[in-house]
Structures are given as structure tokens and as C-alpha cells.
Length: 177
Length: 302
Image (cartoon, rainbow over all chains, first blue to last red):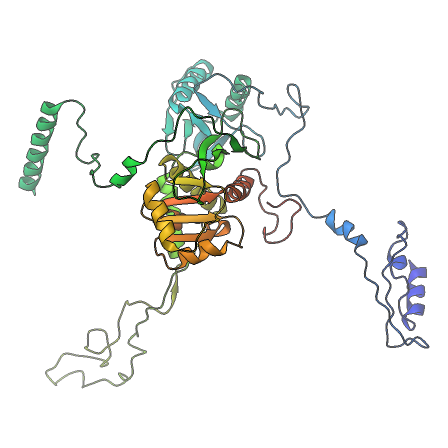
């Protein structure tokens, strides 16, 4: 590092030559390099040449991020993290629950007023009342309680009292959504 | 108050009795649609031949969800006045068959009207009206009411106490996804109500506006038509023809908005416009939340 500093200070009066060599010791730069010579204090060098090259732009391009969520690779059954893909054939039920844009099951918990727990099932299509009946039946078996639910036919969502996101997600995945 | 409510109830009861006599199918009065609402000429439109096999001219580029199937509509041409169907076109259900949410349409329409609004109404407050620095007469003994300045709001010529103050902006932005959903809902409702027509190109034989009006009248499309093409370069003939017409307008596909779609009765899209709109609108279903504004470059913007 100190060597490059001395080197740089020595070069300063003459100007930069092959400036990339100073910054980059590891990767070799291809033949067409950008090199620039300053006018001011260069002794005996009257002409300045600027060569433009667009080949190095690939280093910028590979940093630009994508805007679309990638399609997950094919898994038979659950992946190592526990994520399960939706089944190829949609289940033969009167309702359909789509996956979110990140390919997850759209069941979310909510906590309002500090102590009011609800579970929300979004992105329902088809007969939402049949889904409500099935959810109530399943949660009756699970908890033994008849839980209040709210169906919103405009937004096609289902709200259930209590936190049941893990159970409902597993149940929906088992169904094949 | 009670007497008025009793008479209203009485009227309602008599109406209900009348409806029960007429039959169980009579709708209540608030759900009955007046018969002159829809243009009667539309009923005269001949249905397209059902048994003729028309080729599908365009399939959807994007992947359609497994549980849905594409909606189809006919492709027409503007070359001749008589309605000749060229073929069928597949439309993506996530753009042209979304459930209709009138509340979102209302929100987007209100937003479009108000976000550009700058109200320049301005009134002067008592401190801004000229004069009124001096107490008009002494506090006590003159027999008149006590006042501190001649420009107070209770005086004639005085300032306004709670009036509009200066240019007010009503700017707000609805979330991007709500605006996109509004567009999709508007397109779906146009298709569902038979007000959407797909056309192969916008080439018309003459720049005569009468030709377009004749075509629209002949095909019983409707009163006002919004024609949408994909690119900025539109054919000369259609530009000249629609220039003088008030109810027929041509716009590029980037200019499509909910207000224009609601204002015009009929929407006419070209095949390229359908492709463009599907591409742009479906991207929002599968995109990440922006790391930096979408105006800056990403690798795969639509």
C-alpha cells in the first residue's frame, strides 16, 4: 500500500498512466484500457488522448437488480426450509386461494388494540362461504371452540378470531393451495 | 317527524302490497333500472355468427394461472364500414376478467380529479386588509358598540375570518397497485359490458370524420369511442378524422386512464395495445417492492 502511495506521488507531476493498475492488483484488465493524461504539469507531453471503451460497463450491469420475483425451482414436496410449492393441479374445491407474489400462503396474523388477535386469509377466489364453513369445521376440531369469523365479500378475505396462522397455512398446503 | 315517518311507511306498505299482487319477481323500486338508460340501438346489434370457426389471432404471452382460462373476444377491422370479423383474441384473465370493485374505480377517479387540483382561492384576513390599525372611536362614552379596528370580520369591508387561504394543493398519491388495479377493473368492466372492441390496426381508408361516425352508427357501438393504439406514431388518417370529432378520441396506450375509460362509452384497442397493456399491467403482480424508484434502470422492467 505504501509502495503504491509513493508510486502515485511520484507519478503526480507526470500525470496518470494506466490508472487502473494502481487500484486493482488482483484482476488483470483486458487490452483496451482507459488511460488519461493530464495537461497541467506534464513535462514534454503536449497532446492528451481520451479513449472510450464500453466493455467495462458489464461490471456495472451485473450490479443492477432485477425487478421481478423469480420463479422458485422445482421441488417434489417440501424444500429444506419447509416451503412447499402449490400442487400442479388445483384442488377440486369451490374456492381457490392463490399464492402471494413471494409464493407463500396468504395467511396473516393481526394484533390490534394491544390484545385483539385475528388471522386473515387473503386472495380468496370462488365461493368464500364454503371456505368459511371448512375453516370453522377445521378449527372446531382443532380447538373445540366455535370461533367467530368475518367474511368480506368485497375484498374476498376471511378473518378469524385468534392466531391460527401456522395451523391454517399447514391445512391449506395439505389441501394443495 | 313521527307523522312524516308514518306517511312514508304507509306509502312503502302500499307499494309492497302492490308488488306482492303482481308476482314474486317484481324488484323493489330502488333496484329497478329505468328503461331509457342503455342506448336502445345496442339491442339492434346483430350477434356474431356462433357456428363459424374463427382463427385465434393472438394467444396470451404471459403465463395464465392454472385455475383460470383466458377470456376471448372478436377482432374487427376499421377498413370497411360493415362489420367483418377477422378472428378471435385471447385476453389474460388477470387483466380483463378481474372481479369488479366499484369502490376502487371511485377512488381512482376521485384521485385523478383531485391530485392535480390547486385551488387558488385566497381571501384577506383582518391583518391583510388595508387600514384598520386605529381604534375607530373611544372604548367608552360614545354610545356606539366597542370596536378595535374597522377591518375586523364583523365589519363590512373587513377581513374574512375563516376563508380560503392561498393556493391550496390537493395532491396525494394512491398506492401504485391500487391505480393499476383500477385500470384492470375498468378494462374488465368494459369487456363484461360488451363495450370493448379489439381491432387489428387503426388504418382507415379516408381521413373523413363522417366515415368513422357512419362506422360507429352502423355497428351500434355507442355514443363516445376511445381508440387506443400501442405506440406514439398513429396513422395520419385516423388522427385527421378524430381531430374535429368531440366524442371520438385517439390516445396512445400509455395515456390510458380510468377517467377517460369511464367518460367514453366504448373502448377500442388494437392488438398491439392489448399486448402492451397486458405486459405492463401483469408486471405489477410479480414485481418486488422498489429498492429505488422505477424511473431508474432495472434489468427487466416491462
